[in-house]
Image (cartoon, rainbow, N blue to C red; front, side, top):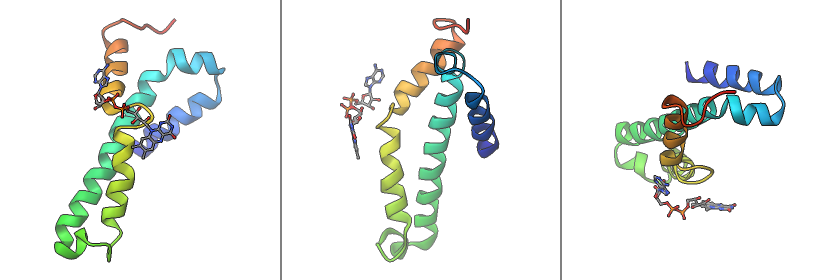
Length: 97
Ligand SMILES: Cc1cc2nc3c(=O)[nH]c(=O)nc-3n(C[C@H](O)[C@H](O)[C@H](O)COP(=O)(O)OP(=O)(O)OC[C@H]3O[C@@H](n4cnc5c(N)ncnc54)[C@H](O)[C@@H]3O)c2cc1C
């Protein structure tokens, strides 16, 4: 579902001028960003748990995947900032024009 939503948003972005993307799709981008970054961290965390101690070690790729993707919940718009952006749209502080 998430992959499809990302593809749909990317497809819409390709058909808009940049200012329109910022005005009309920012909330969608924030939703996809928030959810995708959470999903990959949850998946890596689950994989570590399933594999036990070896999953936590560097013999498996999961700790690297977790650490690498964990940053995206902080950088390039932290998840709190993504939530604020979605709320701006939801509560009409920033409307599509
Ligand atoms: C691996 C890595 C690579 C990086 N690469 C770059 C780079 O190439 N270029 C670059 O410019 N920067 C880079 N950064 C820095 C990154 O952009 C900042 O870490 C990021 O913007 C968050 O800022 P901060 O660390 O000062 O946290 P803060 O802004 O102090 O935020 C701390 C916490 O408070 C929350 N918070 C902050 N403001 C609000 C608010 N208004 N409402 C609600 N919650 C809020 C944040 O969501 C976060 O959880 C990198 C960071 C990392 C970890």
